Image (cartoon, rainbow, N blue to C red; front, side):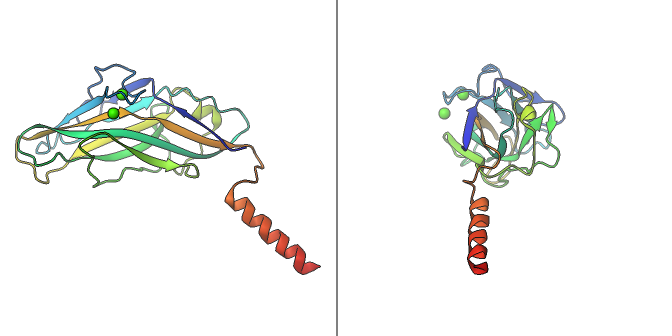
Length: 209
Ligand SMILES: [Ca+2]
Ligand SMILES: [Ca+2]
């Protein structure tokens, strides 16, 4: 039977290597609930060293996918908004530029970047969902890897210059990042692809008769 697990990150980190460090002073549990307790980052669109964030790494999900299951899809929800911090911006302009799956401290090799670059964050909390029940982000992690505390999501954001005066600053705020993993038993016949093959098989059988 198809099944799924939804879990929340219990380990947060801002990965050094360029960009502005995320403010994680709300604690390691900041993204485990939609409670308006945030991880945030303060960006200066005019400063090339400060207009992008470091990678926010959310791990420690604690999945318990049973051995032997087939992974069908992965979905991540990012509840987030942006705020004008200082200045004359008519509206803040913070966008996600990297949304990737991580394992053991690095992006999973070959994984898809799901960020919708150019789509500004809303001014109040909205959940953006990346992936779905049949989308594996172009990766094939093992169940052991998905259950690892090092499996999770990396998020990097950027502030653009549209409508922004020099000296303006904006913040990106993230409330929660649930990840849902969809799985089923090997040989499960409920997936659309298998139904199509079954129909073709029945037609062929009829023609032979
Ligand atoms: Ca919220
Ligand atoms: Ca929160």
